[in-house]
Length: 157
Image (cartoon, rainbow, N blue to C red; front, side, top):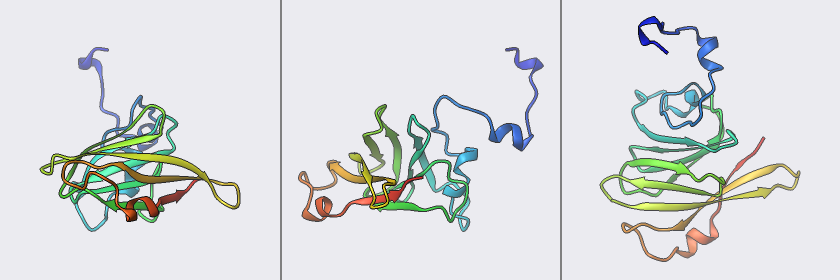
């Protein structure tokens, strides 16, 4: 398309219904609830939404990895926040089969691999579990007993 003939769209109805191939932009309509209202929004450094557009992972400037359902429109939406990087999480991605998450540390130069496990609750609802699979150079080589025993999960829809 010719950019000279293009116009900026400011209609929130049009913007909120826009479909994108990938979801890796930290400022996106479906991520309104990810931001802490007490901050300026710059604390979120990386996001990724799975191929089915149901699961969101995010990294922030404090070294946290967040797991939540997508879209996340309210700050009150359920989420799991796991502190694993020594400082900022510079990037995060979900693999194409939605079975692994890869988070990259900043100054700690770590690459963490996480395993996503679909689980069933007693009521038959789907749940996703996120646990460390491998550790980066800033952490121990073998998962600790705590890493294996503790599973992080969030209720599905």
